[in-house]
Amino acid sequence: MHAPGIWGILVVAVVVILLFGRGKISGMMGEVAQGIKAFQKGMKDDDKPVERVTTTAEVASEPEKKDV
Image (cartoon, rainbow, N blue to C red; front, side, top):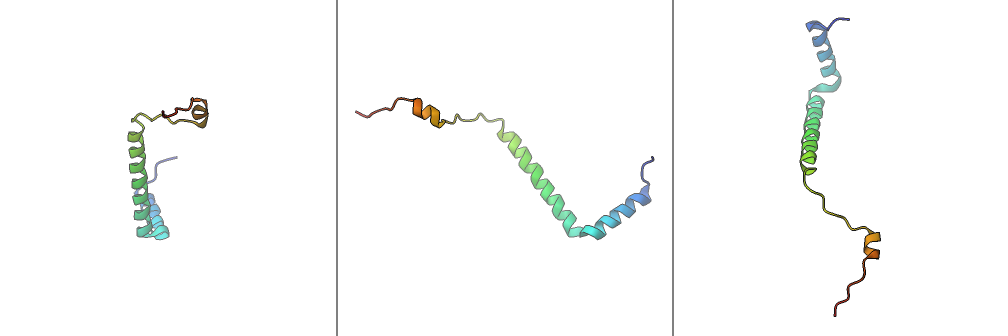
């Protein structure tokens, strides 16, 4: 097989634009960009240490503190 030529790429581009329209394509690209930004923000948040969460088993096993 060989790589598609310039005419093949143009035909595919015209068909895609006719099927989806210019507005839908730009909308999809905007959603992709938002997804990438959210992913990058999530990756930055992973670097922060996670606080310890107390489970109900740990709470039940701790002796109750009474105020005197």
